[in-house]
Image (cartoon, rainbow, N blue to C red; front, side, top):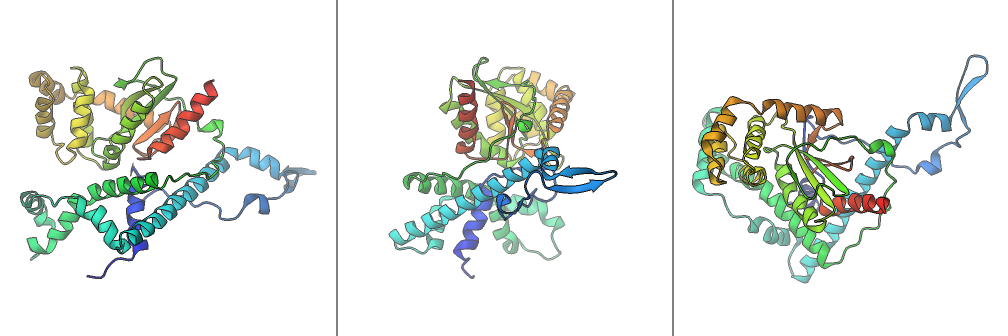
Length: 361
């Protein structure tokens, strides 16, 4: 087997570990951003860009005012593209330096610190997945032929998570400081989002984070650690509210959302929340009932609640509320109404929270 190039290997790991989420769209939402400097190419504000009628005109400044929100979004996309590119550039250099220090190739270093840190899934788990899928495989496909792909499927998200952790370790040890200037956030980005649902943190906190999430989304599971880190870093400053947003293509997510609300009725939402995210391969109704027993719920009450479908209306209301404020994928966080989309790192939360706290002083 040919060894992957370092740039390709790192690009794949970085793409999977940076600012990612489950999205409603079939393809990732990636908007292009201008590559040239606006200040070097834009006309002056009083430049006439259109004339009509009896001497009427529109200036470039008037046009910019008319479309100021989409222009601000383009600036944000350009900043995010640059920041992701910068982060990848930094990681590539750190990996190269660490590999040289340990007398390894870069591929060997990533294999040792990422691939080899993830245990092989049990043979029975691999075989079970093969048995479930073999009717959909081409005729004659053997277990040994597809076993490597099954292993990649079962370990893929864990490898991505380990890569993210390792790259963060390298950056911390190297005392990386990102000083890329961020464009100002326009007022139009702040949305009115009702903070209704299971909550953690003080009610009088100056910062409220409303999270729209999906229990079957792997990126939502990844975000759990980051959210916990945020709450620990700002114990008196942040209140977290969880709202449901099961995506259409996650078939088991709607019932899992209902199940979490049934657990909330017994004051064990967060324990059940953690159990679901820790067991995303086991979200069928029988699994949901088994998790209820594991976290100590009254299973008779839980089963009645889940089987009745009484929480479906609450889930639907959360979905409608999320769609109304522009949620298209999960996880989506509204920090005092400012959207932070995807499983973003702690520093992204910190940037918005610190700015909000500073503004309140």
